[in-house]
Amino acid sequence: MRGFGSSGRGDRASRRGRRGYRRAARAAWPNRGLALLLVAGGALLGWWLPHAERSRHLGGLSYDPSAAQATLGAIASGVITLTGFVLTAVTLVVQSVQAMSPRLVGVLGYFERSLVLFGALTGTAVYALVVLAQVSDEHVPRLSVTLAIVFVVLSSGAILRSLAELREVVTGGGLVRTVGLQLHAALDREWREPEGPAAGPGNADGEIAADQAGVVQRVDGAALAATAARLGVRVTGLVAVGSYTEPGAPLLRVSPAAPAAGARELARAVRVGPARHIEHDPAYGLRLLVDVAIRALSPAVNDPTTAVQTLDQIESVLLRIATRPLGPAVIRDADGTARVTLARPGWDVLLDLALAEILLYGADSLQIQRRLRALLDTLTRAAPQPRATSFAAYRAALNRTAQTLPDPSLTTTATTPDPQGLGGPPPSDRA
Image (cartoon, one colour):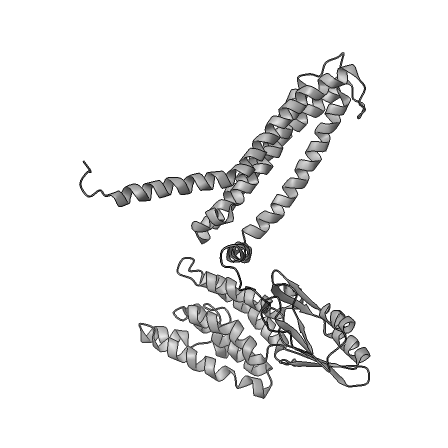
């Protein structure tokens, strides 16, 4: 007889849960099995090889008994300590990923892959300890001691590679790229494309398409102009630096169409990679500064002073670009012929990137209100008149948000420009 409120659905759900757990365990067994194999292999090799060296000379570095014992002891203790360090690092990564989403830990499967590294480190330590037990004044297994050093070098290389993966995993961009790659694999496996070739973008005559998915990291305008002049063509960039592109998406338009060899040379001037880099993408630098500011202004952090310090740097950047040519760039060859047109952000786009989100997230912060007003005053004095007109919309937005503060005295405070946010001298006292 079933208990109160129970049904066959609960039993079926329980069975499905157990089957899912068993499937997950079977999927994890290759890594677990390899880790156990490395540990067992280290123990067996550490026992067999010194015995084999008793009957024949197998080479290796020359060690006296005391030096061999000291070396093996240092290797064993050092690797054990290193294993604890790696375990701590993996634990921190798991916690960081869980802070973004607890569900990502199971999706990434990083901990299962790290079991192989634990197996390699533990196997090296066990090997060194087993060999150490067989070193005596009458017998020093030279090759065995030498192999222990080799295993340490290989384990160190594995750790360095793991640390590189850790650096990628703990970043938000690295997480979403990893999940995206797994999703692509699942789509290709489960939802197959229809038979037959499909016409995709970027395949028209005169267009050069991307051959991989990623972010446009750099467009070398000088190289494009030199190649275009030699080929007698004009090139138009269809994507801006920092934009994500899919394989087959058009990157460049060439007029008239270039031969295959020339098209390949033009394509090499566009670098596509997994993530944006600040070296050739100044807008990404602004994006990073804004991310710091809006995170500081989030209710969970509530640190407007950090946001003000970030606005100091944003103001410096905007002052440097206020008088520079922005928007689409035209590059000419040595004869003065326009050869390349590249897509680049204009002044209004960069101003919105630098200020819009900070204004939104800091609307109820006195420091942000005052610091933004001081920033707009500084830019108004430095920027050419056509660009200075862009500040009117932000001043109007600041006035509207100041009117929403709960007290008129706070509204008066918010409408006073202050480069320090709060605490600076009155405007009349400034030099």
